[in-house]
Length: 126
Image (cartoon, rainbow, N blue to C red):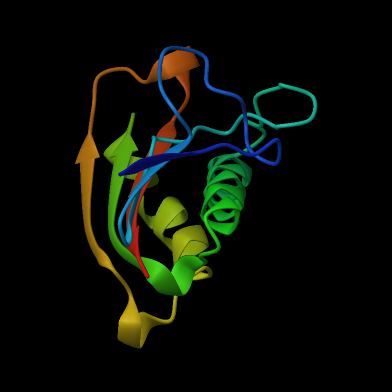
C-alpha cells in the first residue's frame, strides 16, 4: 500500500508529485531544491547555504515519515557544476555518520528546476 508523505516543513510540490512516498518500509523522497518552505524563496547565497537548505528540506520529509538520516540507504545528488562537488560534499557529510553513510551517486546535469545548483533525492528504510 502506498502512503503519501506531506509536510509543511518542506516546500510544497510545484508539480504533480509528492514530497515522499512510503511503500512498506521504504520511503522514496522527491528531489529537493533549496526552497525555503516558509517564504518560498530560493536560498542561493552560496553553494553551502543552498545545500544546507536542501538537506533541511529532506530532513523534514524524513521526519514526516518518522525517519531520520540514519534510515537513508541511497542518495542521488544532481549538480549543475561538478566544481561544486567538494563544497556540497562537505555540507552533506555533516548529516551522516561516515561509517554508516548511504550508497550515493553524484552526477552533473545541464539544468535543474528553477536554475538551482543542486538537487538531492533519497531512499530510506525502517
